[in-house]
Image (cartoon, rainbow, N blue to C red; front, top):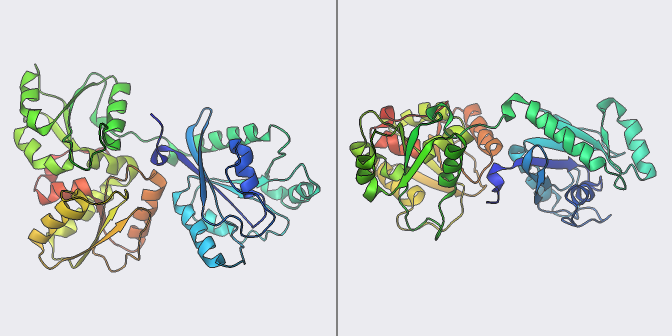
Length: 385
């Protein structure tokens, strides 16, 4: 199965216009992914290219517009480049002879690795770049050599050494080797035809890697499934929308959680989400529901239909707005942000949203935690921290 963008290490390429960002992307990926031209402003929207780096795994390179772009639509181009900062796990910053390094301060604030690159070493200009910025210890890149493999090694080592970038676990300490885990996976109209949704696939794979016994079933067959087992399962993972149904039928000794709750720990800040949802104890005026996926909502959609209906039954006058995909509007007017499981986002993107909410003291939670809380069983479910 091909890794989704949400599972890839995001490597963003920044630098001035004509610093060689697109040329570097093509060199690293071995393909003519980006258009290369001496004309300023050639790169407009960020260009993404997925590949594998040996020893690190799936990555996503993102080529951005020059941060000193002064051409038509420059403000829009630079704004899109700046948005990439939130998604990136690592920054590649291409130096150029006319660079004043002012943009570097914006990158340093993110506390993410910055790798300085001195490109064009096959040209006279490259020698000048290397000399001018020698104090930054940039990585020299000569497109006529195998310098890209040296850069790959540096990316791998820097990423793996950074404590925050150690690959998190979906089930964490909730599952040990030899445990029996039952997955309750109702397949609604939004589920892809003949396929499982991403969190289910990811969880199944991790359980196999942990040498746990993994049993998948529907809600309708859940009770029969439990009765067929010699011993109660150690853990039950369910789709959030049937939380209460499963809770009523589960063995008392079996722990319970949901795919969405697990994703909140895997992608975001589950402790903050758990604390934030408690604002629903009080009257609130404005809620933002953020759905990362961009599929058209259907009549039983959990984000646009089911959760709003539950909220409206408790707070009839509450205003609920919706955001889809990468859009994250001005959040200051909201009393609570409710995000989906974010399986299609990388962790850096979700953590960036959490950081913005914390800075503005705005509570943020996710679908599964919200449903469990509104159903009155949040204190009965398990989650990993």
